[in-house]
Length: 390
Image 1: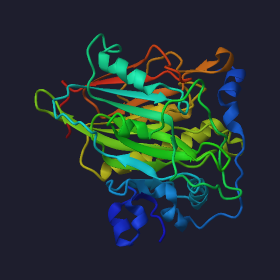
Image 2: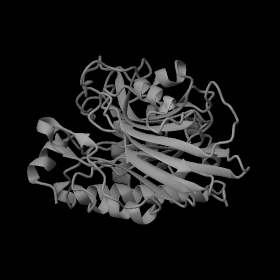
Image 3: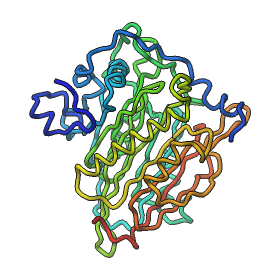
Image 4: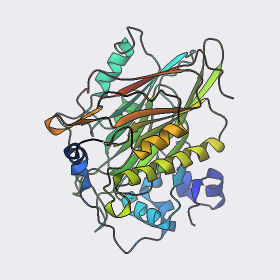
């Protein structure tokens, strides 16, 4: 069975009888330091797998098996899909726990959304969550309901393939800066959050490194309509995690948000227009995918797209301009650097974009990095002036 171009629907998967589709201007030196370590070339092998084999790959499975279906979006080109199949064979399945352990159906007039690159276990999420709940970032007002959009989350698990097929891509291991926090399962098992984890790539090249890394949505609210968006391959496989959360205000208005957790590539792409063109291609693909997802579900109040966009050129990068046009509802104001690298080099790589919302949105950088090399951004979405979903 071939994978449909664009959105892969649950109905189409069921009709095909495929159980595997259970799954739904900066100085030059700054630029080089910011992305140099990630520019080691990944071999592109001439003998590509048949794109139809994408369906049965381990990365397209979902655990636990009782989890609801996940919608998939893949780029339409055979070249991208063939490369994605190689990357997929090196990682484990999607992890999806749709409901938090404790769910209070209280009215929510304001929701906190935090986006943060954890640098593969370096960021202390528990510390950040404790401070968030105590109101340290909200003038003393406690935050009970929130969603974390996390990049460079890792998983160490027996479900990850023990061996990497010869010649298949596996990036070098990213180690924690100092100490190491728990892997993605901690947020569901120990904290009782709802979790959607989309592994993008292996974390380490030796067989004993049974780790993968990717993006995760971690939420105190149930996660609905989960989707994974595989972006065009520029340097490494990048998988966007998307889901919907909803609620009602004190006044009884319903609201419904689609959240997309993004980590764009660091590709040089010298033979394909350069790094700015590469990230623009990924941003365009993401915009198209989210538009398709919106057409296939009930109406939503807003779409929030956030993460690490690796846009070291700054606000003038084509990818950011495209995203601002598609999701224009947060003021385009300069923000302080969100990433600090060697020798104090820094850049603003992390952003929040909002489309379709009539409520207030305040975005700011949190005061510390909590162990990571990135600062978290917090978006406070106030629904008391929203008219709710249309």
